[in-house]
Image 1 (cartoon, helix red, strand yellow):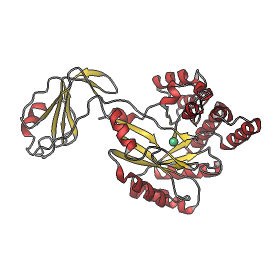
Image 2: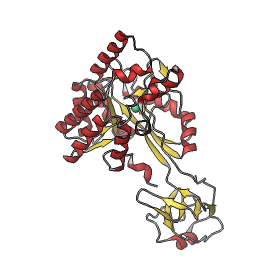
Image 3: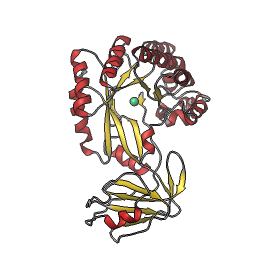
Image 4: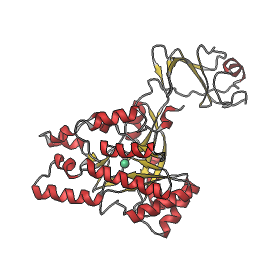
Length: 367
Ligand SMILES: [Zn+2]
């Protein structure tokens, strides 16, 4: 099964647990003031919770430092060393010897997604539980329209998310095109806060969009100020590659990678980038798995185009040797699209991530 990717992001070794408090925050705010931006209810007499995380190593995108973190009404209002405890009603958490990090935001998940005759195994509860255990506190899932209908898709995902245990948001996939879809995109942006739309250039016969649809979608995204996202593989060529494998009798997990080589990811990435340039709208390329695709992104960025390339943990650290494991149950666990590539792509993607060619969603580093 070609399970769409699922990024599991790191961290948060220390999770702050909110506690009820009923006193105004004046005294402590005076003590903590000046250390961190944002009023956040400081001095506003808010009756929210107050938490002081003391003695830890605070890690942010730009650096790690010894600092305490003071949180009021769920907002970080001070980050600096040695914040005094000015009030008995502040819950103090001792983080000595620990790292204190922002909760992760995973921008790409597919919980309880119905696809290829099956459903992804994690739902909005089990997936959330696993994410929270690892320090991811928010994610953005992809609503799949129902027979191309965006509103019906959103209703379906709202229902799936009723069992949620953490924060979440939605992107929206666009799987067909007509005036109704165009109108619904506007409704999604203006009434539901969904402002990123994903176009699958792969999965011929199910989710795949043609260049014609992609172009119209890019133009609509531009007019709405929304972000266009692409799953970049040449779906027509993938279908051809799959037929080749079947003709050769290669039907195991290794055939998955062989049927959709890096060149097809590079081609689609290049095409999407050029069409986005033609329309003059930003582009977000999801799960960049190959050097071929990464280099197209690097080139576009060098030329000043606004392209975001998303890496995936499996693409960064694994190689396709797993797909050749003689045990089907083992090998099949490494099937995803685009496929995990042969050794070498992973190192190149790591370098691209560390040099900023690829980006983790920047938000996950913020408080
Ligand atoms: Zn996906």
